[in-house]
Amino acid sequence: MSYANNIRRGIVKGGKSWPRRTPSLSRPRVNNEPPAIDMAHYDPIGSWLPEKVESSRRENPFMLTWAQGQNRHKVPIMTHGEGVYLFDDQGNKYLDWTSQAVCANLGHSLPESIVQAAAGQMSALPFVYGGIGITEVRVRLNQLMAEILPGDLRAAVYPSSGAEANEAGIMMAKRFTGRSKVISWYRSYHGATANALGATGDYRRWYGGDQVPGMIKAFNPFPLFFEHAGATQEEKVQQALNMLEEQILNEGPDDIASIMMESIVGAGGVLVMPDGYMQGVRAICDEYGILMHCDEVMVGFGRTGKLFGFQNYEGVMPDIVSAAKGISSAAVPLSMTACSEEIMSFFEDKPLGYGSTYQAHPVAMACAYENIKHLFKENIVGRVQDMAPLFEAEMARLAAKHPSIKQYRSIGIFGCLDIQEVDGSNPKLQHVAPHEAFLKYKKAFNDNGLVGLHRYPHIHCAPPLNITEAELIDGFNRLDNALDVLDAALGYDTLNTDTVPAAAASS
Image (cartoon, rainbow, N blue to C red; front, side, top):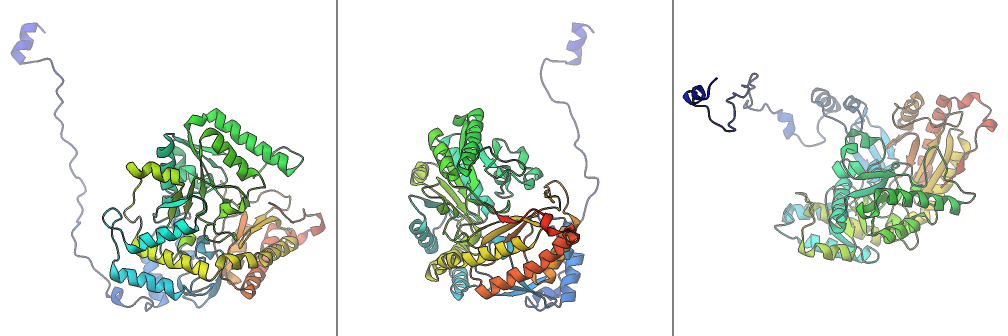
């Protein structure tokens, strides 16, 4: 076509868009129907009969979190609690053997002071957004935290969950250092939000956490299938530290904001770091300007016989501490992220870069405030220390009796039994479904009047911190009966147990 023809058609040089119609709505749905509300909703809580509750659960499905949705039909419907016990709608009574998710630290009959604090705050001022108003209880709780946190640690923010507290800690570390990477362990769990899940090392990271950039995984002193070299524990610790430092050097020390770890690894098996390891990590952090972030979500506020888990390691002071669960004994969701005075001062003239609508929720803080005062007034931490020898003796008794138990670990009122196959192998790798034997064990666990969290091949023992000696012994006897079923299901009942590897306490 000639230049003259282009002129006649009005063609011009340019970058205009093409006309296009977007798709039309092909499946219009009615979205303004008047709701049909069951008038039974106006009946008092607790007045629905079990049949009504079960019918509603069946007809109105909801999801679980780390389990298949259909499993909701197997979960007992709990009606009330009393002390360390829970009761379901069939009249069954269960001893809460793991304090739910290691969080109901005062059991299920809260001190009246906590109940009244929540009710009083709800009446006076149920909510104020943290950037619009400061409540007296926020100031009081913050002062109390400054008084009980060791060293120069200061509470910085109060989110709602452990995951959120870890998110705040990760952001704090990145903003303070100007670095982008975080090192954490494979045997770890830090929460289900983006950065917290990215920092997580166990199988739950596979649900999207692997896509979070800058999250580096390392081995702690407890790999599953190999031992660090060395003839002594001290030599093995040194090898673990050498391995960590080499990884830091390969990642680039100037790119690493923090090393993030559970002070005592919780869901991964109640792993207490060996002597010298945490001190070595602290020294490596100091050498390369890396922040040490201790996740205390599961063990903070007394679980190990210390107020905070990192206090079990002499001379170790983290830069960042995240806590939750025990801060309110799970009465109302609350968490905390604390940091050193240096980090706190850094943010005096700049925003943290983290936020949450319910951060510093006044009702939750009122519960936490009374809960922490109760811990000190009733010397709950000292009580845990007094109960710890009996707790460990019972752990050792079960480990010695049951051939399915490879080893145990125990600190305070927090313990774990590791289960083994007849040939000594691991019976539950993360990527495979639970062994049929564990399903039989779980049924026996419930049939013997226990309820709790299950993370096979580990069996956790973490009852409420105010459990009595008689209740504790009773709980271990119930667990003993359930473990008889597990032994048989794994095939130990047909063996001469003298040939089975002996169970022994292990760190």
